Length: 147
Image (cartoon, rainbow, N blue to C red; front, top):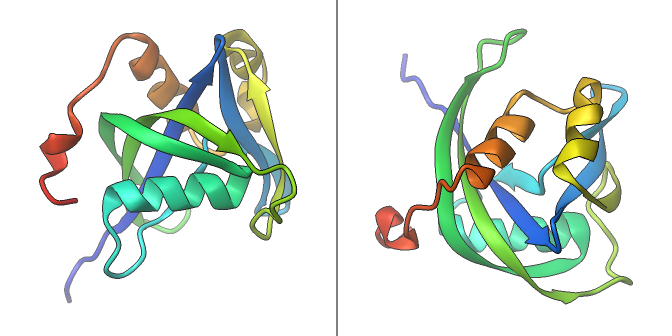
């Protein structure tokens, strides 16, 4: 049997000390997450970050650095996910764009507001990625070499 992890991307987008997040339905509950999603066949990681953020928030962003790579094993299914988290700057907002199915809305929250709502985080990676970003984790996009 060949083991195949799922690859996802996520974006930390900051504007005036607030961070772009999505409220989405997951397993029957409304949760908070960074704009994030699965890498599609033939797509670069950077393009996936741009696409997922636009589809989920209506914001066009430009990835600037890699915050980190995060491995997570889903406790209920034993599925392994590798998350590539980027920092990205907001470029343009398209408020009339229809958001992805399951996305209720995009919100801008401070770190404290996000911490205060920990019970609503989709996974523990929501806070971990943000805290790594705030601690200065920034790796050049060239780390991904043709990604």
